[in-house]
Length: 252
Image (cartoon, rainbow, N blue to C red; front, side, top):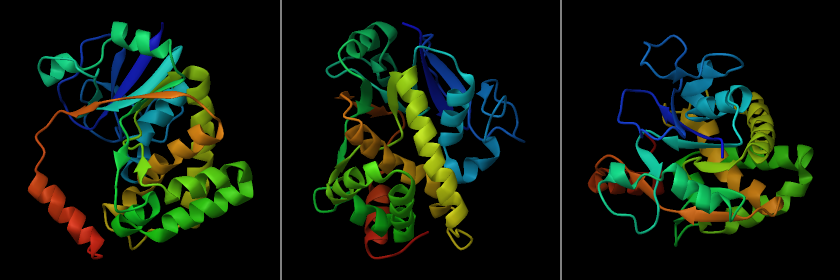
């Protein structure tokens, strides 16, 4: 299988040695060269990285990368195989393990997040701005009405896939990107984010995380969830504090 998983990064970092991985410097336009493939070549939206996050790398892969299977991971988040042993670096999924999984399903996804006491909609509203999702629904209603049912069901659910991480056949990858970026570019035209914090200004990356499940559900695609390992140490005190701040309406 010809597989390419871009590893979105904005700094030098450890990268898997397996040839299925391609480190991509996202938001590279105007930045110091890190020695990785930049997202500023060919057809690209590198200059939108402040608002689109890793999606500038995804767009680059959609428009410029040729492979039978394409996917996205992050410099500090990688797909693992359940039950694998060793260091974090040794547990990152390799070609052989991935090929076996791809024979069984349309898409590889990270284990979903369960908010338990919150729906996908309420969690987003507590963390960001309600209009981000409300305007997205309006766009779907106008341009892709067949997806509205899945949008509503997904927003009411407490479970969802995050991180914009996935691996799928190139035809599906291209189809998803065409649909998703069409929605996001329209959303960009309609949203006024001039008073958003630097964090909330990453709105199009955040919204896209909520779109993936809607697309998969509507198109009735199969998928396998596998673990994702965070490569750095988690500061759970800081993470918990930020969660509570968002719950009571504090946005930094």
